[in-house]
Each structure stands twice: as C-alpha cells, then as structure tokens.
Length: 169
Image (cartoon, rainbow, N blue to C red; front, side, top):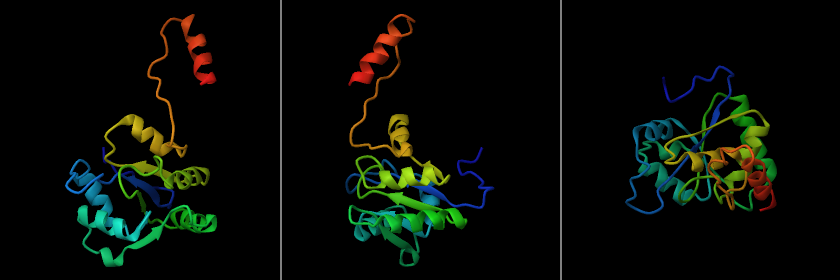
C-alpha cells in the first residue's frame, strides 16, 4: 500500500514534516519525506532562513519557487484561515515544519493543526520516529505538556481508580 493517500475529495493535505535538531542529524533523511518535500511548493515555517535550510537538506531543487509562509506568535488568525482555505479548495499539499524537531509539539503549528481538523482537512505525518510523538503532533492539542500513561490496569477493579487518579492530575 502506498504511503501517500490518493485524495478523492479534491483537497490538498497538510503534511507535518520533522526536521533535524542540529546540523548533521540525518535521522529524518528518508526517501518518503524527500519525495513529499520535493513536490510541495507551499511551506509553513517559523522562519524563512530555517525553512530554506530544511528544504535544501531534503533535496528540494526549486527552493526559489517555494512559497514560505511564516507562522509564529505574530501571525494573524486570518492568515492561517487563508492557508486552510487554500489547502481545502485546491488540490495542493502543504508542509508544516518547525525550526527544529517535530512541528506542533511545543510549537506555533499546534493551532494550525487544530484548525485543519476543524475544517475537515487531512493532516498526515511522515517519518516520525515514535507513535506517541506522532499522536501529539496530529492531535492539534498543546504539545507543551502532556502525559503518557501507557496501559491501564488490566484488573477491572483497579482500572476505575487509576482513571480517577489521572483525571485529578
């Protein structure tokens, strides 16, 4: 089965692409991410400089043709809405990347992901090394602070008390 979904709705998708934490970190350098990055010409990032560096890292050959949209604490809400509508109304995929690491985890991209879900857009991740990280990225919930509990107790009597304990945290 292909990693890329065929989009029958006529909408683009928002791809959350992890980027290296530091120079020389090849952890995220794989063909799936490279192929997606090379075909996208709309990138949402925290800074133009870092976006170009990451596009170059992934081998994008037409960086001068890429529209880099800045997302930070100063980006107006209406601008995010314009991006969402463009993804929704056209069959163009967009990329969201952070300056370092995974977008939407302790990152301004969190709100954009939540808005994308609200408007029914498909949001996908590529090359994320952990299911927990992927779930936080895709959720649109704040990745600033979250709790991973793992498995709840298998015993029926212990499970409700553990859930109550977690609710109080």
